[in-house]
Image 1 (tube, rainbow, N blue to C red):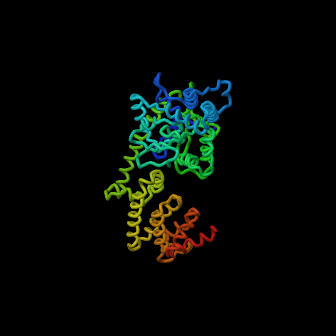
Image 2 (image 1 turned 90 degrees about the vertical axis):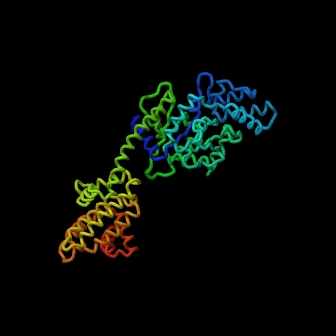
Image 3 (image 1 turned 120 degrees about the horizontal axis):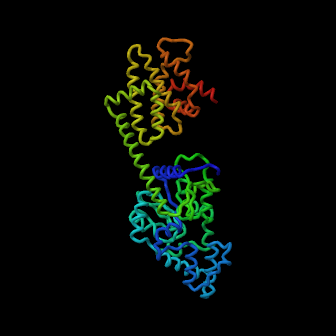
Length: 461
């Protein structure tokens, strides 16, 4: 991809997902190594684990020239085969001994200083889920009381407010769960295998922050590829894959890799996480201020104050295109505003309809119709809450009784201004909204609305 991306955009994406609630973490050995390494006591990567386990079990480890082109699962398989021959035991028993040794070696846990530092970091980021290829319990130690540790035999599920930590390749508490040899990987590629499908689905439904992992594992790469091809519809939620790549000389700006994943380089994992936390805290503070202001505004919409009456009049008169601006605000804060908006709308059109009963107040029908038309023209049907659609449909049916069939003649008893408004704007109603209004009118006995829409439906078909 040639598209450029900045650190500011990456952190904005991560915050949007944090705010949405679908920011997850995919954690590899690099995280444990960054947290545990204190100069004399450190975590081991996969290669080192295989090497140290082999030496501990008295199995000769291949020289560097014999490791060229050999994957880590292949290497682990060779070591288990050598252990089988050395001890004159079955390959199955040798593999279990090897996995037991892996579990013994991966007992590292963070010391108090690092523990406090990373606990604060993870509590602020508050990931929706963590998937790790690590066997150790470093993350569980950091998130004591705030996470649920899961092995590959468990489902990726946790109680409310608790972060699931799913050990994709097994946990040191259960040697049989460890995935390290070639044949251990084979079941992962079976059709409908839970771990593989769940990994792909989870990534697809989230923004995934990849930490301490090189994205070189085949089943993880397969899941990433699958996640991008499960659905092709436009995302209605934050979705990205952001890999934090460790390197001695990090590039100052992030970039897209050949697979379209965002890569942001660092030579200090803790420094990067602190930068992320700082951005989250800063953006959350700004959002809190916006929400505080929004809540004040919502309270005004719901109140009976003089300010509310001024807002209501501004909405009815559409001063400075106010109705559309309010719809724009609703689209951004739909879940916070929709109920107050419906209440406010109902009060506004109720007030107008009440005035329309006064002698000669035909202009009120026009005001009433213009409010409804603004909403049905500018609010996409698929995003419109059913209750709002119902209110608009019923209201539109009421006013259609006073709308004439044509603007060429003025018939006594009809609302002439409303008639002009309808015929000038009816063609602007989106086709899907038009069809849904017609279906609702037909099935719910809204005869006036159905008759007015019938010619439009015939034309659109």
